[in-house]
Amino acid sequence: MSRLRSQILALSITALGLGSVSWIATGCGEIEAVERWPSGAALLADTRSLDRLLEQVTRLEGTPLARRAERLRAELPDCPIVEGRAESGRISDIWPALSCATGSADLNGLEQARDGWDIALSVPVAGDHGLGTLSVEASGDIELELQLPRAAAEGLASLALPGGKAAGSTELSASETLIHARVRPRGGLDLAALVPANSQGARLFQLKSELFAGLVLDGVWEIATYLPEEGQAMPRTALALNFSNRAAAIAAMEDFIGNLQKSWPVARTFFRLGEADGACLLDLAIMPGLAPCYVATDRALVVGWNPASLRKALDGQGGERDGLGDSSGAIIHLDRFADADRILSASLQTEANARPTRYPWKRISAKATPDASGFRLVLQFESGRGT
Image 1 (cartoon, rainbow, N blue to C red):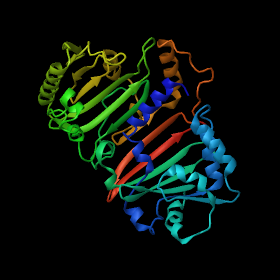
Image 2: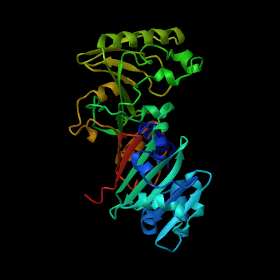
Image 3: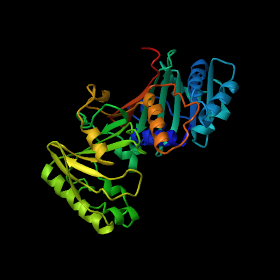
Image 4: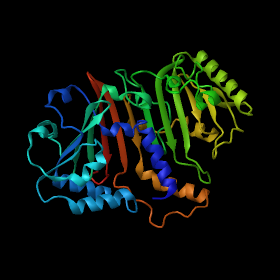
């Protein structure tokens, strides 16, 4: 996998919930209903389905993950059901310990959870236990359901885990997206609370402003990363922050820009997009292509990596709105990554891979909902072979 593609994938994982945190888990009323979980991490799986899952991963040719999956396939025990345990609690330590299932009593809870699924996994999460259940279709489609205990919603993870109120319709264009996510966090959007008061970030960017303290925002954030334009070295990216009061949101953003100008020698440039007014900091060139701009629409502050990012994000295209609906969730379009890698490689005059990575899935979607004692996250890996 090329360095460029690795960077895009890392950004994807970040957008998908600030959230690779999410993949280890769940906690809900259903978790409490089953028998106690084994200590550490544990896995119980239909061997044929696990082999099918590993075969999908081997298609990520040239990656360490694919090589590891190939080795694991060769080492799978010859029995219908396998189990694995890791007292360390790390999923990576389960694989060397795979063996034929013994039917031991301490895995009864995991066996109950696996009913109707191919694979069940329990792991320690935030002093509790989480559960993941997974099924692999013959087409290559995968459904993964994760349950996270409420205690998992701490720090940055709190921004990815939703409350009971719907996130509402999307603000940003759904066309040409690599990543598109929209979330109404359970605790709202208090970004400043996540930044230590005396940290470098707080000093440089004045993150204790009203804007970042969540005083003028209504709690919904949305991010979209788009295919880069030909000749450009970065994908176009935009962030939308819904507000509760437009005038207050604009005042807070302008105050934030004023504070930035005290720390950085940058000039404010007026910017307009349609009926939406805003500003750019065109000389804040601390990263490739960075010339951040914002505009205030009727319901959100929209911040772009540069003017082109804003124009793309607010072009009104994307009839299906990326399938996000009004739920908190995210979508990664893996079938567009090859085009992104080609454009970025050409822009940076980097030799593209002779054999670009072919992803076994064309799209990954995630939807998250809260329940009585935690959070439920459902991920769909769509291979495209079943359509």
